[in-house]
Amino acid sequence: MPLIEIKNLTKTYVEGDTETTVLNGVSFEVEKGEFVAIMGPSGSGKSTLLHMIGLLDEPTSGEYKFDGKKGSSFDELAVSKLRNGKFGFIFQSFNLLPKTTVLENVKLPLLYSDVPRSEWDKKALAAIELVGLSHRINHESNELSGGEKQRVAIARALVNDPEIIFADEPTGNLDSKTGKIIMDFIQKLNDEEGHTVMLITHETVTAEHAKRIIRIKDGEIVSDEPVKNRRKATDEYEK
Image 1 (cartoon, rainbow, N blue to C red):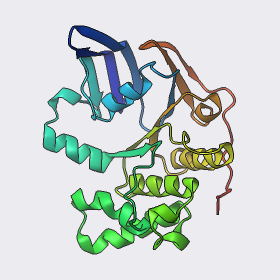
Image 2 (tube, rainbow, N blue to C red; image 1 turned 180 degrees about the vertical axis):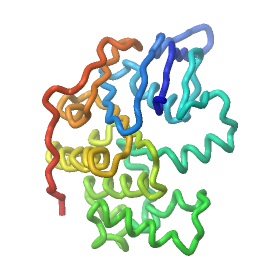
Image 3 (cartoon, one colour; image 1 turned 90 degrees about the horizontal axis):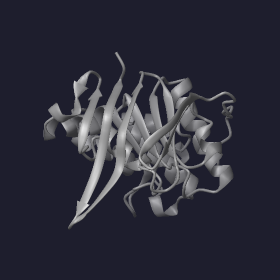
């Protein structure tokens, strides 16, 4: 059974008398353990699609299933549990709390979890170690470089051991070298840790870290193909 099933998904925004269709009959499936990049120019609907799959927004029509269950069947509590437990989100703007330490930022999702408070530090420290930032745990987020901030955001996304990671333009605010480091790490989360990854990007060089690329234009899928020459991940870290 696919982890994600999407059939004829549409999204139309209405403002006054104006209707704008952002997604128009999108259909595809994602298996557990896949690394899928969704590519397209600005305004193509790729971020809207990711928000639907991550249950941050609702479709106008069509069907979406996660792990065999219809997205429309999840009540508010179930959606919250999915977002906090099985979903991990990484955004372009990092979304870290300012003047708050690395450790405190990474622990944030645990506030809304079923994990006992006595285990929070242990889980957060393990996630921070995984992204190579153990030497920065007591530094505040405003003291970090862009690459370090994104690695904190990745640790925060991983702290509840999610089934799927949603990465929305995770290298958008980074220089090319730092962006490569971040993509190498996300690639390893898929290859070595087994996390399913869905990546949004408009850059081919970023998408080639995935195993499959879905290209979207004007709200419709124009191609869905495996990556022929996948980029290789390295062990380099930005210090």
